[in-house]
Image (cartoon, rainbow, N blue to C red; front, side, top):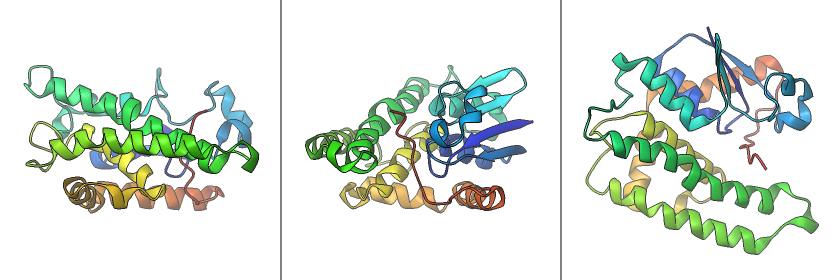
Length: 222
């Protein structure tokens, strides 16, 4: 059985979305944000205190994009993976890594220094600079989608899930209005996917059942 530890709309939404796209059985364990402060017992499972934590037997994964790749690769019949023999394999890996290292990272600084720090520690210049950084890097997404419905391989893959989360985070930050037209259309297409909608419903339902606040609180992982 797959077990996923998750906070509402945190980076762990990536593997949750993948699980729903793959329609795999799993158990969802909801945590308050940030779990390292509000669910101290979680540190026994993940000393980092961050989400995601995906476990399956002896497998333990804490990186959201890597978890997407793992789930896609271990269930190849679903078509969300891109194998090494495919000419699009390099682009696929690049998008998976870019999704977190390049597109999510600057947004975490916007969150931390614009919302999560006490007023006296907030840094408007950091917020402004890293907002610009994110939007500048998002041009790669806009370019890739100018004549394509998906990022690579001519179809929906785990890379779209990974990058899609970065767009979800940007929406929470009020940045979606600054997406280019191709990215806007892409984001709308992703949101109507049944797998995305099931993942959204699953996290809300599990949070309510487990007594965890349902207010989105993306993980800044400072």
